Image 1 (cartoon, one colour):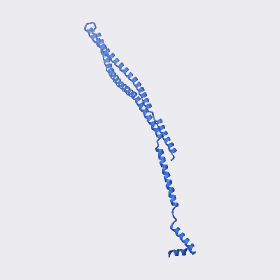
Image 2 (spheres, one colour; image 1 turned 180 degrees about the horizontal axis):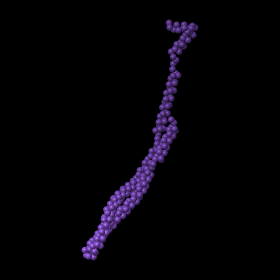
Image 3 (cartoon, helix red, strand yellow; image 1 turned 180 degrees about the vertical axis):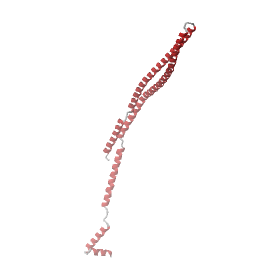
Length: 234
């Protein structure tokens, strides 16, 4: 195979490798895209966390308001008892007031249980979301810090690959292989030429020599070839 053809084939292979590298995803671009996605996720997570905190605050506030309302009913209860004992409130009116206080206390105590459950649930949710947000912040910060090193490593890798590809263009192995094959072809042709020369120089066969001897003898004796043959055997 001619050296020029080998070089063209090799250039095609190198060109194909360039195409494959170009079509492959750039790792830096992939990482930068991942950072943008993490930033978007963190932004959405912070929004959800803020909502959870708002609900937790509202639940705590409602719980405190209910506790305050229960304390006020207890004060009213104490006041009714004092007024009855002091003769400032008739037993009938005190009974009506006591029933209202009792009804309101039952309602507030039931509301208190529900609000305590809500406050606990929202607080637990808030703590969980806050932990997730902090984890996302840590991962994002770590990835941002590593991006600089990754970019440098990627550039070094690309430079090394480019140098290897450039050096491969000057590789002498294929050329030397072509030369060796040419030498072998020359040697083979020389051997063939020598063999043909040997065949052309081979002596005539024994039967041809006998025919020549008989013919010469016949001419010398003037007889036939058969007579010459008989004389030769005597």
